[in-house]
Length: 289
Image (cartoon, rainbow, N blue to C red; front, side):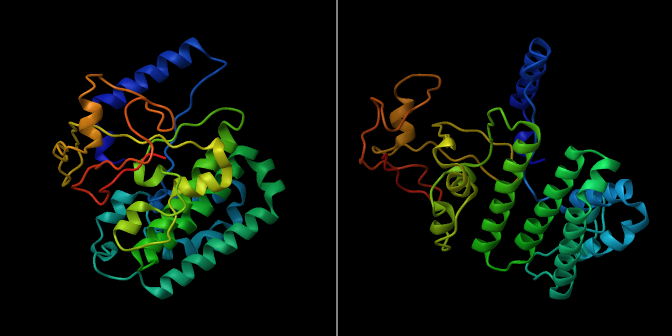
């Protein structure tokens, strides 16, 4: 879990979840993580799944997963303690990548072929989560092994797109879903502004993918603040944007503790006008449409 979630706000969220679910036992709220970066846990969960539904073939069908990044470990922490797993400035070995993907493909094919038997040995939900785990492990491996940062980021976002929709279909298909992530993941543009600003155009982000899949059923809500705090190691909170055309300053000077702003219908910002937005980062202008 990223350090930014180690905060009193998360305590307040879980206190609210507990109170709501206690008061509404037939209308509960479920909370899931949907990032795909913990490949060790994904591989470990798939080994455990095969041990449950097809123990005689577990090693045959999961041994190749050890070739995946961190696939030989049960936790990401254990993987990180081994120096050979530090890929800083180094490419992931191609032979291992090939073995990993071949193993993922073989396992997926067997789970699909034997879905009825595996469901009988566990449950439909367990099998659905295993199929989703296989898909997420493939996306994470592609993200790790791809040298191009733009392609790597889009592969991760594709995995998160699949994970978010998969978890919704398994656990809350008839309900509504709220996703919490960086704006750079959530914005529903066809081209990621974050990646474009860093020299990688024409790469979509998760929000753009969700917009393509769900249409206008997916709505992105961006977050902006004048004075911010952050508890992420190595990341400093930006200073207030004091420029005359500052979006943060404009909203801050309204004197409200918070607001939910509909960019298509509000009294604060003008459609088509240009505002500066966090000029210390890659986004320098903001144009409401």
